[in-house]
Length: 507
Image (cartoon, rainbow, N blue to C red):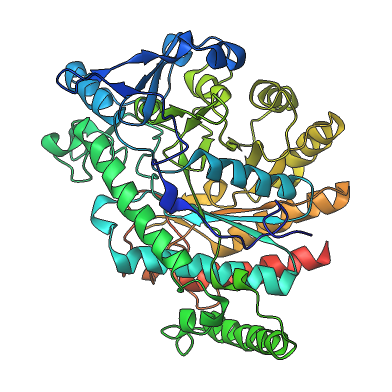
């Protein structure tokens, strides 16, 4: 196996190349006054050769970006904010179209190759992070804690399950949330629902809840700051496997899962020391590949950050490496599926218990017509009580069709309930049972359980009940900090990683 091949898992991440070289360098400036001149990319021979279907027009600006007028605008778009000032929205979108990309198209291709290995049964996807990121949580401590938790989970899965782990965060873009109701009523007062910091404010008052397009620019800048710090941590030494103990120093004494992790860390240390003594000290152990993902919910924002890749002429949503379409926006005749069908990023689709076989097969036809491993990930969120009944037919028929999708379990969203205290919560046992059911289905069919997708935080919150360091319903009020859905805390996340590693070995 040669260094740099798609099968080498510890190659260096390249987020520092964001928006400076390979991405859409087709624009020019006029000599008189240095004003922007928009060059119609659709007039070029390369565009005509590789033109995506149904795109009306593509233009490239001097600011190293490309914008287009997409076909999704002619289709119904669910879960979009009702902005009172459409002129203000258009102005913000025009400004975003001139911003640099947040990720490089080549990194999206690299992640697609990694996910191709997941689809072929050669690797495992660990995808996790906040339910909804917040503008006031873009701090070094909070970003580091999330990253540290995912690195620890990745170490557990890689070492204990002996499987390459693709690490993808729900990070640097997860500022928007779909809602079951468009309004919220408290004490007789009805206001628009909170849809994430990218749309409106969490405070329950009229001013905060009015959708404000200026927040889209704040989302961009918060995502850029987060990616900068993630890049520094993952390539600057913090993610070095020799730091496997340091990730745990503040945790080992107070948590059973922390103590269990420390034992595994000692084993990893011994293995590294053996390799060094034998004359092997791979540079790949010193950095980690880490990718960013979020739900592609706000189509004005995602379209404004869609660019033409100068290498291929293809379209990429450069707001993140991977984007997914949620359970509430996966309508086959809707705008979100249309948008996703045009871009070259790896795409995820959340599939709930109502998903039919015909729908699953149609998603494949629409989003992965070339049957490319790594292009499409099915993230199933059935609920612990339904996964064993609903999932087998989907996996069986999709596999029989010859499609190479990655199957991933989201054991969070189908297991939510409201405690007597009024807190929305989840039982850790239900989360674990859905994961068990997911593995049982794949084992019975001889297919590959490709990964887990979880809402988690690196902080010691009290939002989900249960776990080794048990949280009771009466504890929920102590540190219930989520703005939307309850997350696993660090201890519960590590508990889950150990248990998943055991299930994977049993496959």
